[in-house]
Image 1 (cartoon, rainbow, N blue to C red):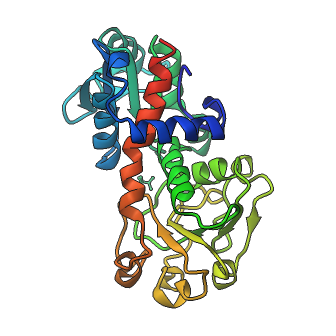
Image 2 (image 1 turned 180 degrees about the horizontal axis):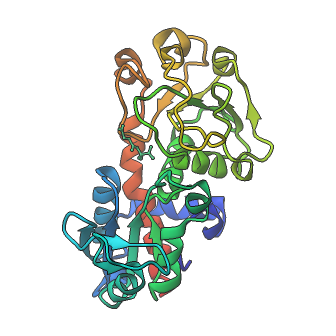
Amino acid sequence: MKNFTSVKDIPGIEEALKVAFDVKKNKFAYQHLGKNKTMVLIFFNSSLRTRLSTQKAAMNLGMNTMVLNVGEESWQMESELGVIMDGDKPEHLLEAIPVIGQYCDVIGVRAFAKFKSREDDYSEKILNQFVKYAGVPVVSMEGATRHPLQSFADLVTIEEYKTKPRPKVVLTWAPHPRALPQAVANSFVEWMSKTDYDLVVTHPKGYELAPEFMGNVKVEYDQKKAFEGADFIYAKNWSSYTSYGQILSKDFGWTVNEEKMALTNNAKFMHCLPVRRNVVVSDGVIDSPNSIVVPQAANREVTAQAVLKMILENL
Ligand code: SN0
């Protein structure tokens, strides 16, 4: 594997799962692969799990890691092409990216949707500049449209907790005070579509995800109906794709609570975190024994390590 920016980069779901379960069992067995190799992690946006789990995954493989938070610790970076740089951004990505590539063997990048232009976001303007100019493999640590390291961890978690071969997996929109990217939801749908799970997406009208991610995935506008018989409830807020970046609803009627979980087949509750308690999900649900958000987060280390292992093997 060279770059990792979407599910299309892995050799296949089955093989990727095999690698993940193997590194989970043998965390420190592949340290030779990363010896004298360095990973730089670049953050244009905040992080907790992604930063720590990816760094830990690299360290498990014997790599060295360096983290850079753009803007706070580095120069502000310009990403537009052809601009007159007489504003507040002293450095262009066109130089910064190949320079960073000189100091490392793998680059991890987090660059969220900016919500200025749907076209810019959906063309992955920043992430693709890294892929183009880095000269070394690039791992997406959440781009504008996808969060593949998260979705891979979600897949591993569902595989670990499922009690039947073909569980019903429900992705439900939930309210939020801020406009969030569609990346986690897009990517979740993209990865789940590669499995034979019974996948249902539920959201209010106007929150339809991009057709390139949804394909033929079932949409159920009635959240309670969607929850019926579900084995996994995956909650996530996203802003509108069609009315791009807008908040169309803050309806607490969509909050995941005990009453709705009672409609499910004793479903496990999942969320990528960070989560707004009593907005996205009630305390009662996230604190219940059915909540698997912590083991789900723990699998971020596992899947980051699986991805880095596959990249290192190909260097
Ligand atoms: C990000 C998102 O894409 O939704 C990262 C999720 C892994 N989430 C947020 O930015 C949440 C921020 C907030 O205000 O709750």
